Length: 304
Image (cartoon, rainbow, N blue to C red; front, side, top):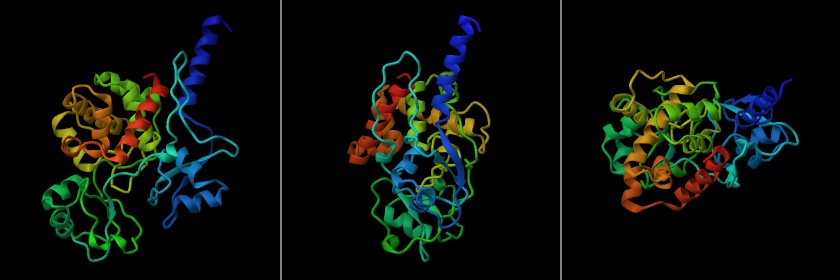
């Protein structure tokens, strides 16, 4: 083996270390399962299972989503540093705050009632969640409420099994690598390390992930954000079931936030999580600061 080929092999192994942490198996979530039940069945702690999948320990699981089960004796999955970079130890993935505004519809809820409680138009809430404003709201539907909206009256009642509204983008059983995300970011003039850090924080690079707030895929894109990006930023028709196009939509949206915030990475990351108008109006909420701290630390693992 030549000296050059040895270096190529070394770089390849390091790249794979970022994209594919050691896992024993992939688990497809069955109806009624939770992080705690899956962790118990595999002899894991909830924290280690959540960290391996880029989730908060309190995250809800949706039937059909996939989980990476860490191999016995391995540390929680975190991306390895690129060669030649100085790294900053990230905050544990288990400390990641949950998605904002997540709510599972209870029997008796209506879209108009939830919109009225959140003080937003019905059409706005429907558009953001990919729902028909005139349709019947099914119990168990996972939706996002506006940041800071008061909890609905029925939020204390037991939640039915969650259901994902049929809307783009669609979760699919695909994963991407840090190099995939960097390539998409570079093509669109967006910081690659920030894009990768947000993708890891949001989903662990898993396009099957759906949050408790109805965000989907690698970049956890809301249906309303997907439609806005497609109409205003994308230069071609995006495939709603493609992991790479999910990354593309998230990267384009992140790029727009960077422009709106004058290139401030921390504020753009805060806006990605909390919403730009909310950040501008009330500043970063405590959970947003945790999210931004995690993302800024993770940037160092992706060359930022």
